[in-house]
Length: 210
Length: 210
DNA sequence: CGTGAATGGATAGCAGCACTATCCGCTATC
DNA sequence: GATAGCGGATAGTGCTGCTATCCATTCACG
Image 1 (cartoon, rainbow over the protein chains, first blue to last red):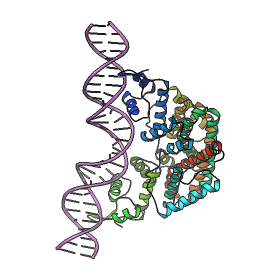
Image 2: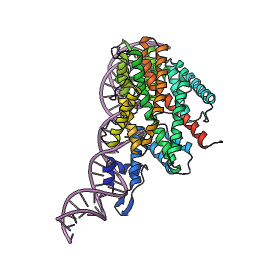
Image 3: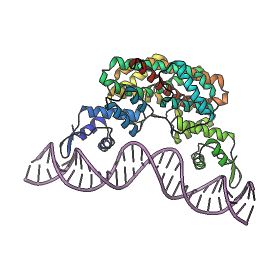
Image 4: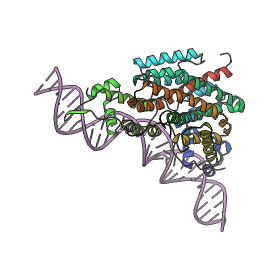
């Protein structure tokens, strides 16, 4: 398959495919002559993955490159991949050193130990969580922290289902990629569902009879 | 308070504040003379909110402007605000008409009616959900749909807690803003927690003794 | 064998976004 | 009366994710 056909099958324009190859997201085709290369089904699948991570997961091209490099490297352990994978939406990593940030970090450390989670507060996700809670506090919604356990229950529930899925459905060599897909696309799924549930709950509370 | 002090208190540079005023995110200060204006505490709070929606929620300036306009307009009903609020990360709204998208849309419609959710499949969140599921299917993870009910349970749980919080803690005139904050920042909280839980679940499964 | 479309590879350009810098005429403050 | 800060306007910047153009092939077709 040449690049034109790959483009037609995936809907990705030819120049964009070239761009992805340049950026290291996609391996180039196998050269059959000086200016002819042939692409296979793995390229097609990889392109689908790239589009999913970019369009659905909102990841930047550089982030995708990093994650895919980790996926392709069998040496890299699962959690390292995850660490680089799953932060499509965290803000600029400014060192906030105000009172709210400190309190939020303490709350997160406490939450992690309270739930016995085998993760360290240095995890980037923990930093994101702290920032979100600090922002809440700054807006006068410190009481939102009361919901943390409900949120954590839901998160655990989903994470268990996710890992069970990976464990049950995927062969070992598919697992790393499966975890990336599950983490990134699963986040989009959960967010959408939450917004739908939000609308439903809101309708039940306020528009009692609509 | 003049603009310099507002800048110092919030950490937002003066030119950026001016930019937000130009873009309609922030009302200008009250003019006390031709080139002096005074800002109050509402401006300070609004700036915090803008930074939270941008940095934590990952929303674009134009989206924030839209949401804040809705918050400021007491006419606009709750669900309209939510509709425009809560989509910080959905991709380009391309009309995907392939088999996977159609199947995913059907699955979403089915899910909504199965759970009795009082929302319509035309909701943008439903479209996002369909796209995410379609992307999964394209990557050979159609079986992920088996987890949908687990995900939906978690989403419902969180949404109920969220709405109860708004209902219990906030006066009526704070509710709209509270829902926006809860929807956007709550999403960041839930995502972070899911990633932490993911790491924990993964550690339990694979690094059995670390 | 000739011709036109497609290809790989390289470089340059573009649109959108979120600021940021500069300038002007004025004003508050010391 | 000097100097720092201000409101308002306009122009410029850095980054991102493509997109356009060019060139020297090369393949597919008549």
